[in-house]
Length: 531
Image (cartoon, rainbow, N blue to C red; front, side, top):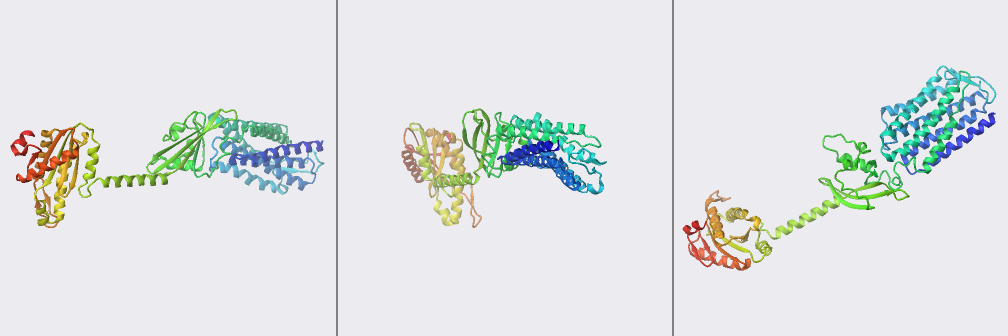
């Protein structure tokens, strides 16, 4: 009988070893390694049980019993941690987890190693191999049962809760784990029911072998240790790019370390970062900056900027089962901020240089090139007016107060011109400095009287304004003259020549006045009536 039971226990150990080996070779590192260690403990438990079935020497019995208990503790700890991480693969053990995982072996194994001297856990007596009276439970044996039962019971609770609350993609994995845990629990219950104070019965190895066969089936059918089907085999946890994985409904079921760091970076100011809280939530809530994921396209690329200075290249891959059914999507987010910022800086520099090429560096108004470009952009055949303004006696200002004072006068005139052009900006109006003290206004849509009125307001603004000499702090007041030309369908260059001729007519007529091309000088009364 002892030989037959030894063979049965050896077969159980082989089943557990196969499951441990298969799990260890899985590409999913976290849960697979945990299961492999727990299944390794089951192998040790069964193997030690096979040895106990034939051992007669009390020291050998004590050593094998220590190994069996160590294996049982490994099974309990592995089951507990698998249950805790079943729906959260990246969970880190908290204080309670560490107490459940560490305290039982720390308390039980030293006490069991010293049992030959204190006989508190087991009471030994010599007997024949396979004899049921070789040992009996000691007064502290319930403590061993509790050390194994607490983590095992908690694992059942966590597995059941995870099976109810977790996204669908986790459920095959959790369901297989729960079946294994229930099989072992049944073996424990039956063993405890048949164990008496004088006879210790251990049928758990049979339950462990059955659970191993269930686990092997689950692994081969990718129902267990495949929380992320087709994904964990393609990427590594330390991938520098952020990876978020969703199920077919768009619920986030996993993210790698870079993904967690990205979500921590994007957390609202003052809010506690909780990247693990993204699991089980819709991707649209976790990453609202992402474009809608295509339901038909296998790979979609886009670029998003969820916050200033952060630019992400988005790649979406559809995950399909062997039958072609959409199982989920893998969203790869690559930080391209450095490249994008360099490109934006280059574009900004290009725009700035292009703008500088058409603007006067002193006044900020368009230069002659900018004016011609603005005129070329106007629709042909529309009414157009040109006003050319020149500061009176500007050389005297430079000679008397210096060129810095002259620049101050030009800035005053440019501000007046810019104000005059503001109300006509929707029509394409602009102010420019042609060179020296000569300025121009381009006024689309205005006829001669309206343009003359604008010119008069400009001259009135110049009279009312003043500049201050940077050297002497003297207040400088100047006047200006203006020439106006307006027509329908004529090019701006032709009107500028006419306005320039009218300007010189105004200069010859005494300055500080407006002259309309073709009409001679316009005195203040006429200009006021036109305005």
